[in-house]
Image (cartoon, rainbow, N blue to C red):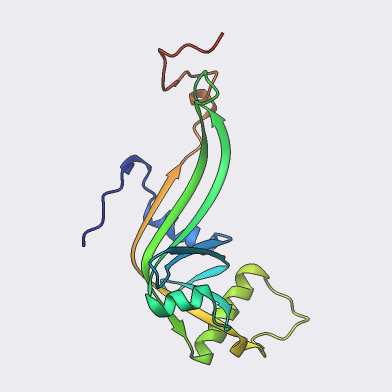
Length: 184
């Protein structure tokens, strides 16, 4: 099955920016498919590691794990908002600077303890930084979590850059419906 074309090709994000947002994004949303065919989305902290999206959750069976075991096809989204800006004379002529990525692929449960530890090393480095007063690489509850690795099959990234001040309202009038008259 071929991928649908991206409707706003003018908003496509360069590969280097996709990699940067995947590396630095705070939280992502993992979409899975339930056995009854209904979608399920779960917000998760993650790391971009070795060209894969790595995530974790409890080892207790629940909606997310049941869905992944049912169907490994998933979709993962990361977005970063920016400034809101006006581009035209009406209130609805307003937009927002943003970056967003959608990753399509298949997710696998990682049971290998050294790989799970590697994930947590990367997770701690991303979200906590360096604390020399605490032992590194010590994960006594490793069996209490499930680690997932999402293998990327396709990724799309879009962005809206903040226009220069000269291209924003009121310096420039880029009203989308110039013939419309405001209510009196």
